[in-house]
Length: 116
Image (spheres, helix red, strand yellow):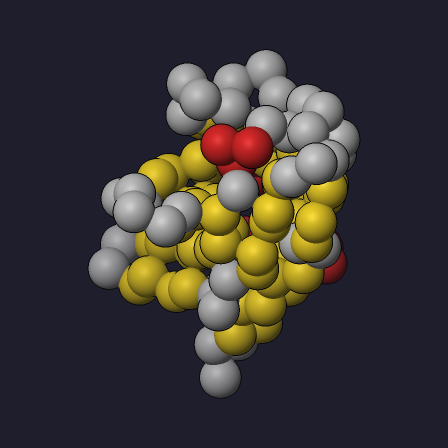
C-alpha cells in the first residue's frame, strides 16, 4: 500500500523556521522524483521544490529560492523541506508528492501558518 505522510507543520512567526518531513512507503522510493507543493487559500497550487532520484539536482520556485532546502534520505524513505526566513505569504497547506513515469502519489498535507 502506497503511503506518504507529512509532518512538521505548525504556527511560526515571520522570520522563523520549520522543517517538514514526509515518510513514504509501499513503492520504490529511490527511483522517484520527490516534490513539495503548497496550496494557499485563493491561490493556485504551487510547486515549491523538487529533488531528483539520487538527489543530484534540485529545483526551487523563485518565491522560496535561498530560503527553502529540499533533501532526501533514500535509506529511510524520507524527504524533507527545511524552511527558513518564513514569510506570511508562505502560509499554506504543504503536500509531499512522489512521481515516476505515470505514478503520482500524494500525502494528505500539513498546514503551515506564518503569523505574528
